[in-house]
Image (cartoon, rainbow, N blue to C red; front, side, top):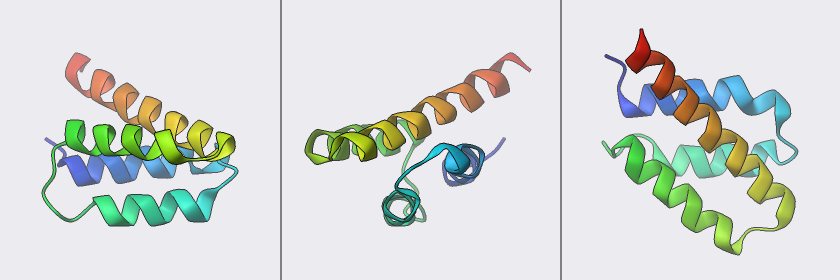
Length: 78
């Protein structure tokens, strides 16, 4: 089973090509990984981050969250 950090990094890699604020999202991702947080905690942190973000960053974070959830669904159905 893939760790939360690995899954989250894979989600970032898969969705990075669709992001307008890649450097900002990368910085947020780097701040969330490596601490042993659950994927749900990471997603909740991103959702909190979205509340203060401008519209394109909110969209990028939503793309990342959706990709992470997609990977989880794909892994649990395999």
